[in-house]
Image (spheres, rainbow, N blue to C red):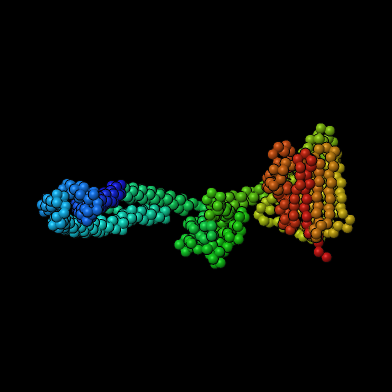
Length: 565
Ligand code: ADP
């Protein structure tokens, strides 16, 4: 039955109850009222007439109206005969009254009138008694019926009052429980209401919704599982080592390559706190300690010393970091190629040095008049050969230095060295180039500057490189200033020019190998000078820097420690 029908029936039933009960009560009251009205009308009035007649009878001698009163009352009584025997008594009354009216002095007529009145009185009193008893019985019957009907109706109403709320609240509770379960992602939840009403329909709708959610969840789960195994396959097929961590730095996954590098099986470390693993695992410790640093890692792998670069990627969910992935990229092949290149450059540069030196030597011999006198053009050609040979020698020198740096073979001869004399040497070495461009080189060396702890040859090489660049990138007639100051236990040497300067965006790469500022039209230069300078200075425990502004000039500088004692 539908809920609407149930509610209508419930309310309808209450309406019927009220109607039935009210109608019965009204009928009962009407019957009682009728009974008492009858008593009043039929009997009480007769008693009143009798009373009036008796009263008038006593006044016949004094009241001239007495006979008229008696007559009119008897007439009224004659019209109000209701009880059996009352008619005869009334006829008798009329007869004895007429006798009395004819013979008023005959006192024997009085008792007859009175007797008839008594009979009428008695008959009516008995009727009153009988009727009031009947009314009582009617009232009692009505009370009994009303009580029975009231009890039955009250019982039904009570049953309804007790049961009806649960008809509504039970399915609502079941639905509320179902919704809570769905909110907690329990999509298996179903509501079983064996009702064919609106609640039943609601439960069916809920169940089909839960079924759909369940299907969706399962298909999503299957999709996620498929994606997971796909990604796992890709990760495991990769040649790079990959380790994933959650936001609490616990290991989430590790691929086969990383397993080999760390020497740990995935099942032994997944879910464990990375720092705990690092206690016993050197590589894990290095990975965690270095953080985001991109330093190359030398790891023994594939039965040889291998090189890995480390990349750390943050895993983000919207803006929140929920973990990180470390990728160890095997760069051993590049390393091997680089090594081969360095060896090749070293060999070629070394091999070029001897023939270049002999070309220079031969060119110088040619200028000797004892070999023969040269005309001006021949002189210029030989000068050009010498210049080119110098340039080639410089390049081979740089390449050799670079290969030394790359193979980590920088041999340092540290000793207390005079900054002043190194500056002097560098100025001398570049004087000719400066003069060719009418460039003046000034020095400003702080008084009492101490000696520094340095490899004289390499530091001078750096200074010469600074100066050569300053001359190269300055316009004619410009000035160059070399300064040396002592500061916090170090001596800072700077070379400042008024050349074209360097765009700010290139400054961070200026010390990189083979880097040349784009648009530099100088034919010469390998882009190695500053890279070698950096390696030389840092190998000596010093610091190197550049300050430059485009079109305003550059300042290159280094700082080395003051010599002890
Ligand atoms: P190179 O042998 O090509 O000069 P360096 O390593 O010495 O190589 O310099 C790298 C690049 O830095 C140069 O190509 C040049 O563009 C720029 N550079 C170096 N010194 C200066 C300077 N004093 N003024 C402007 N640019 C400079």
